[in-house]
Image 1 (cartoon, helix red, strand yellow):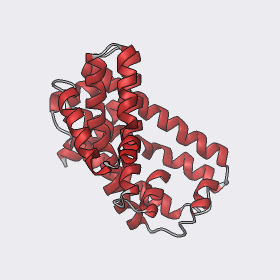
Image 2 (cartoon, one colour):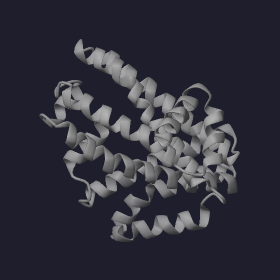
Image 3 (spheres, helix red, strand yellow):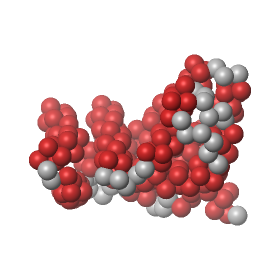
Image 4 (cartoon, one colour):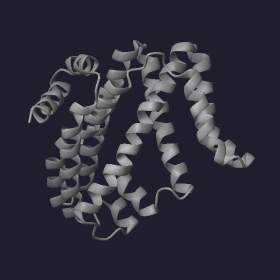
Length: 246
């Protein structure tokens, strides 16, 4: 009960006073307190997406997923959305480290080279070595003393922020107002990114520009790695579609 209460207080702090939430994350040194809210978000999202018309919005109709149960939605998100968050946290460690070590003029090209690594590895026929390449890059360039647990806690809660979008999403879906539905998703996506960017800046003491660049590259690398996992057969097309719809 204490952990549940603490989790929702943590979540409320992140919404009302982000800096206080960042401080709490550093003090707690654990991501456990963010988990109950995250599970609540996954469950609420699973119910919403299972009840939402399968042909709304138009992008969902094109995927032709048909009816998907709440259990399937929950299981898929619990595995692959969590996997994406793990990738994101380690990517933030890598790009924050590069941002700290390199001037912007060098930071951007080196980061772009890391993003291009999957394509280069495929052309060279060494795609199997890709995980090793990234592990080596992370080991040598990661941010020293990066706060993985606090960063994970903020990433988890920033993602769970989308639970607040469910009521307006349900309303726009009921009226089949696609523009409104996409606007709600965009607003909450930007809000989530701003919170994650604020946390990186708070934890790593980077400038605003480098923080923004590190966050953008981290998201890009996480998506690229998810796609690489899909192309290698680790993630099915259906699971990938469900992940991107959420």
